[in-house]
Amino acid sequence: MYKSETIFGMSVQLVFQITQHKRDELLIQSLVSYFGCGRYEPSNNKDFGQFVIRKLEDLTEKVIPFFDKYKIVGIKAMDYKDFCNIAKIMKDKSHLTPEGLKKIKSLKSGMNKGRILN
Image 1 (spheres, rainbow, N blue to C red):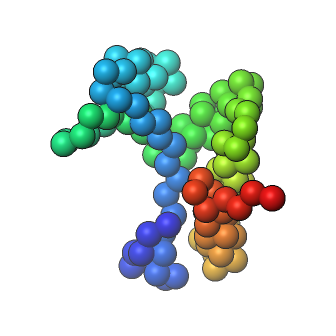
Image 2: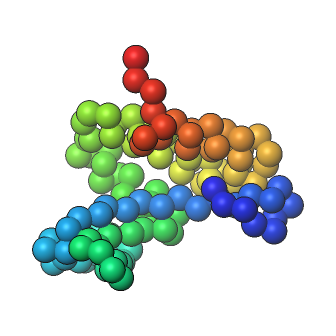
Image 3: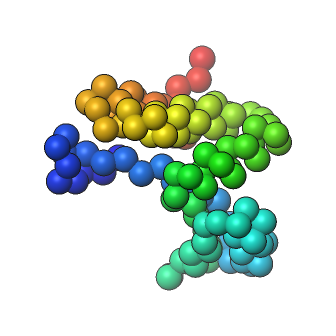
């Protein structure tokens, strides 16, 4: 989520990214070909690069089906579930409502480093 000049003052953009050391640049670039979308973004002053997909249609039609077929295991599986929930909210256009934004904000706050494990 980021501040914007929308009616609710917030906008949402769902982003899938994989970051790797620059020595794996060819591997990361091959993901662009494999998925048929996204792009490779090299870091300016660091030793890494990223495979990034921002287009919702590509996320829902290519990335999510891939990871539904090839299951993610471990803690990232819970982040993936939240990612899918956010994608569904956005696909249904519910992110354009205050309730949808609130739900996305709640899901986002528990992802990655924000996740509390019992």
